[in-house]
Image (cartoon, rainbow, N blue to C red; front, side, top):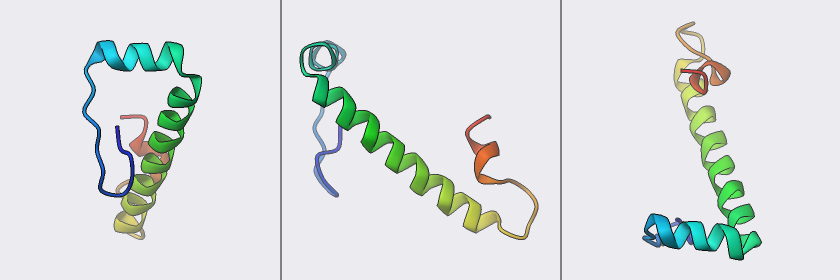
Length: 63
């Protein structure tokens, strides 16, 4: 899990499961962070492929 731009917290499956079940904000924040990262990735991929016709941002998530 990423805490900030350069901070990463390592968690095992059991700890993540506990956090998701007992700390609802943890799950919401984790999903929000993942969504932001996916959007940045999709934007970068779309910019790299712009005009080349090889891929678009939506097709990257369906592979």
